Length: 535
Ligand code: ACM
Image (cartoon, rainbow, N blue to C red):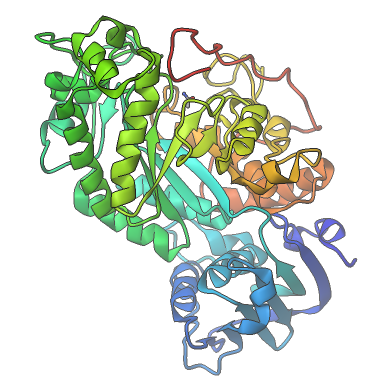
């Protein structure tokens, strides 16, 4: 066996995502109480993290000064593999992980974890349980690098709030699969989860709703600033960047419940929305609203150090603007064509402020026409819209609902938990292709990568979330990392990978006994012709 596909026939070399090149070597490397873990200059953080992950589950100290048979090194020799590439060589007497940069080491230590017996991944708090065969690694040489720089997952904590302890576990699961972006959907009609010192009612009032779709059960939750800052640091240590999303100008009803003066209906009191769908209440376009958005973005930029801030931008009905005298004044003052143009104007003004803060705007897009060009476009309708946006000069992240929205049930089986109407099965998730080969090179070049979407209308608890996420998130990670497409090979590797998910306590959907195909998911409701946000 000389390549990754045939190596995947061996359970201990069946990795997810699939490495670029896997060459099995003879023998095994045995880990015991005398095995040292040594870090070269600049590699200490990755080595510390690896020790922190392995010592509690294996009971092995992996001391830095114990002779160092496992070595992590930064070396300019691996520059050709890029920022996240690495080479891992396991021989009977040594393990060497080398990379040109710290992120490469962070990806490589996840490969090393997967090469160990699954017990090494045991869920936090479990006592070390040595497998019958002891702790060992198969000898192998792996040379690896990702296809795409952006490999992410969006977690909607606005519909159902998740405590930061769970979000940290979610980050661990992303890191295990070499996913490097956690996109946190922090605000929506049904809840506002990020505290903003200047606007305390955002979380006090906007963080609670009376019920959800008539269930009679109140729901509330908000993070503290310290929790969010801690999450950012936790994720950064694992090579995952956190991208915050603050929705505007639509999906804003929770904010309007807290501060009605930011809306279009003077004197009308709104509650955080208790239904799912697209709400007509959107931000107004008067100066006080822009001041509010700037204030919120200042705080967002303080807490989240990454280059991107997501400004939402999807599904913004304009019925309120069509009736609003303040909107008419704005259209006249800015020389806009009509209420439809207010959407782009609003996002442009928010993006201008982000630029002053040294940040880059991201927005949801159908066709791309509604986003100012400074935006990186997150293409959620379908891949062709992403291609069109790329050809117009946007950087693009592919998030097409047909293959990346994990709120669809995973099968048509009547026992499957409820989700959006339709089905996205494992094969559908694996078939996500962010930049098809027949595209113009200038469009393909603009595709930064892809991500999964975990909208939570139908997932209240971590267990419900993980059931929806797994194993489809593994399929997405595989296609975001590796250019190699081979469904039977993926399914075989995933079969072995399920033992790792089991060890982690991830209770996802079991794999189909035969490669099954369900009818693909029904189209998302087509864009409203009156909506500014959709084409
Ligand atoms: C979206 O699904 N409205 C981004």
